[in-house]
Length: 421
Picture 1 (cartoon, rainbow, N blue to C red):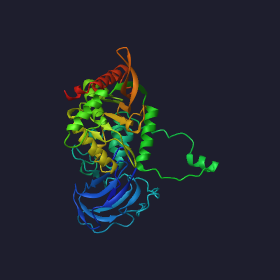
Picture 2: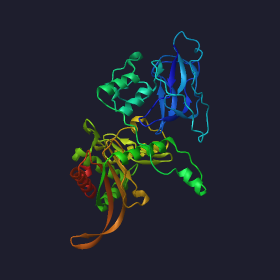
Picture 3: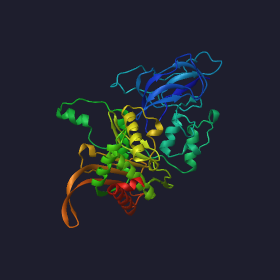
Picture 4: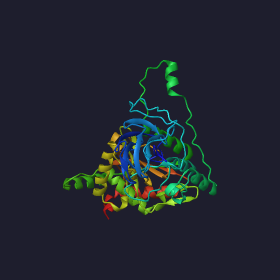
């Protein structure tokens, strides 16, 4: 029986993607683990691999197609001994041709769940791969089911929809659909008032940002804590380091990342996430750092940041930021993280409050360092001061813990020699 290859969900937030190119053509044989296509998601361009063995019988969605919905049939795999696709096998499937970016509203056939579906998964650098159909993955996300704890009943132990639904029923979990954004439709508003405008279609990244941040602001109980940090010593130390540096120079942001990493090691209760079953206390200090790209905001992750020197952090951050802007990050480089830093100081922003990046519990918003009047030993003086605001999920981190973290962070910033101990 031929196997339908579906458009996979390569990230928890993906609903559609662009099929950049096929690395195999019709008639080519494929084996499990072989790269068969490149797909552009809301975060990056990723390679996908085949799970089943066979021959590419038909490419349904051509390379270069945009706006392909998750679970659309994109190709058909023929098993050994099969030479043709049965009549009506692809009934209802949409054959997509390469389209211009503005024509991203591709119609799609209803998603089908079948044990003949071939799931294709991203090629991760490490970790255990869960074999599940794209539909099962999407339902698992909606129902908060951990696929690693689900036993698959499909071919070769693949997890299918019924497996996920059974697991959800066993734990009495019920899917809660996200609330639709409320407000005035901007297009109707502009048209009714005769306002001239250019319509720039939303990228997948922009759509995901809108959805996730709306959900965060509506469902996560935020509170905010702000400290002012004097950074004169930090600036002097940075100058000394860069004067003796043989290669790349370190930035103020590198010191901030290092200070957050050390502070999280000192106050581990701030390195956590909320779950209905309990609070997840992360063992590693993995820090997400917000990077602005042409497509929107993305947060690459510096793994085990507390174990890296400032120079190593600087090198790692430069590499991640460059590849983030080129849309070349690997999934494991932007999925995860326990704490986020958002720095707008380079734009001259004095202070701001950032929206938490779920399921993380904290995000630190960093403003610009600027000269301000201060009182030192009873005398009026001038110092370079940087305002930092911590947005906190009150379900996970109480006010005292948030204050303890900021106190540790402030001390490290104002006495930067501690970052080298």
